[in-house]
Structures are given as C-alpha cells and as structure tokens.
Image (cartoon, rainbow, N blue to C red; front, side, top):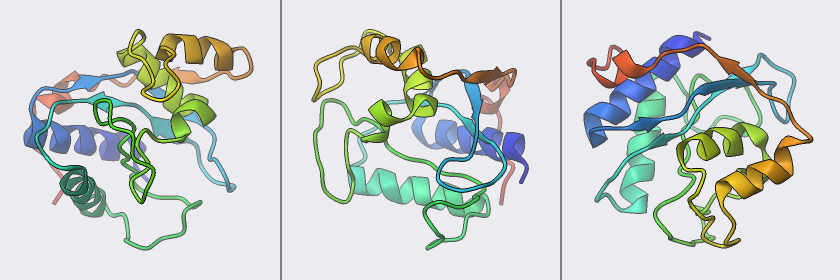
Length: 160
C-alpha cells in the first residue's frame, strides 16, 4: 500500500470538501491488533456544518475512493482509515462513539491530537490533551515521519 499517496489524497479530499485544515505531523506506528506493515497516523481539524452521520458518510466515501473495501475486518491492513475523534464538545456513545475511546488508549491517536490542540480539554475527562499525553508518553515512543502535507491542502484530489 502506498501510505504516502493515500494520506496525501485523503488530506486533499478533506481540504476540498471542508476548506482549510489544521494538520498534525505524521507519525508511524506498528500495526495494532494484527501482524502487518506499519501505519501512518495524523489528525486533521476542520469546521463543518455536516451532521455526524453525514460526516461519517463523507469519510467512508473518501476511504472507498482510496481503495478501502467496505466490510473488511476491523484489525487488518487497509489503504485508509478515517475516524471522527471529536465533534466539538459532543458526547455520544452509540454507533459513532464520540469522543473516540482510542484517544486515551493509543499514543498514535493522542500524540497528533495533542500536537493540534494541546490545551483543548477532553469533553468527558476534563483534562487537556497535553495532560493526557504527558501521562501516556512515558510508556510509549512514536516516530515522526518527515511528510510535508502543506501542498496536499492546496491541490486537487488525484484519486478517482
């Protein structure tokens, strides 16, 4: 899988649909839950008037355009995996799980979120993402990848 191409394509698609993005650095992490190639992880922030359901639909459409097959196994290799981590201060634990429980469970989710919003508070835990990262980071190391995505937010989506 061409991780760099898929990440760039996803950032382009998000930028085209939602306008200016805040984009974290990219981190590489080992596959989680199965043996496989390492993943690239990052967080994008943007403003939208879409409902949560409409946003999830758009994220799935972007994944599909990048070769992700709907209905695949949860812990398996995939071209792209886009999730909503936060939606303002919304707390909703149904099929959408907002805020995502992954935020405090996985350093590859929390670190890039902390990069974008270190002083923002987790809507349920009332702790900043910087505080949450400080508590988790002593046990985990991530490798930052030198992948400049600035041009991806200014180009057309090059994936079908």
